[in-house]
Image 1 (cartoon, rainbow, N blue to C red):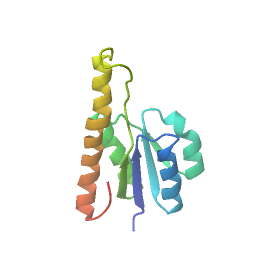
Image 2: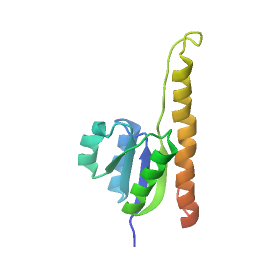
Image 3: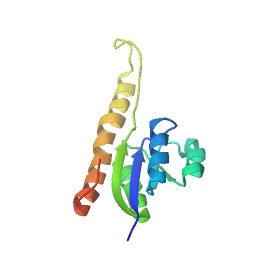
Image 4: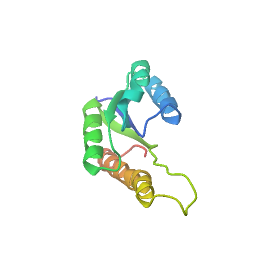
Length: 128
């Protein structure tokens, strides 16, 4: 039987790293997604997770992430922890920076959720 897989999109050193450690200890094959996978090298070495370079605001990139996860086993858990931020007074924010932040946080969440849902519906169980 294939191993259960947990995908964590928007992986970093905080909450995502804690989840990767916990899920790894529970026997999940953990797949970490980040724009910069180099920052995850210590976590990958510590947990045995796999890191996949992913831009969550790009549908093809998210599809490649889940295709990589499919090779590790059957998706059971998907966590979306990616975010884009722009800070400052609203009167001074760069509209393109705000657009990118919304693409990462909202559209990226949709793309990851859609890919996860396709697999979990077919499986008949799991968590997003």
